[in-house]
Image (cartoon, rainbow, N blue to C red; front, side, top):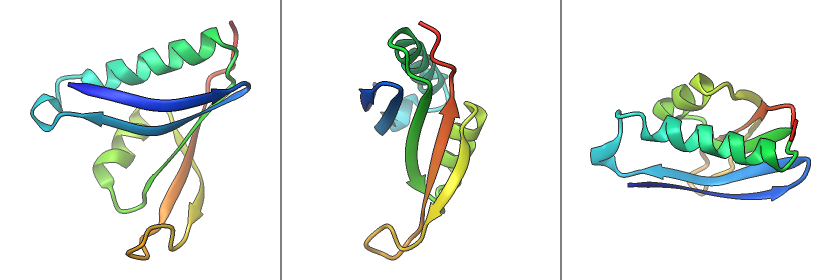
Length: 96
């Protein structure tokens, strides 16, 4: 149905991939996955969660912003097709 791939190196974590099966999208599964990621990271003392997404992926950007992520920089020409990526971060405080 869905998954998150990430690595944690306290005090930071990076989401490498998040995916929800297309037929399951729009049912809150992505938000549930992200809430579980945040809880997992907090328990381990993570202060900031990072990720990168395509600058032109409006659906992903809206989702990540709705979860509290903010853009911290643009990586021009990041993808092979010369598309830009946006680096995003979420400060979670890291209180175990």
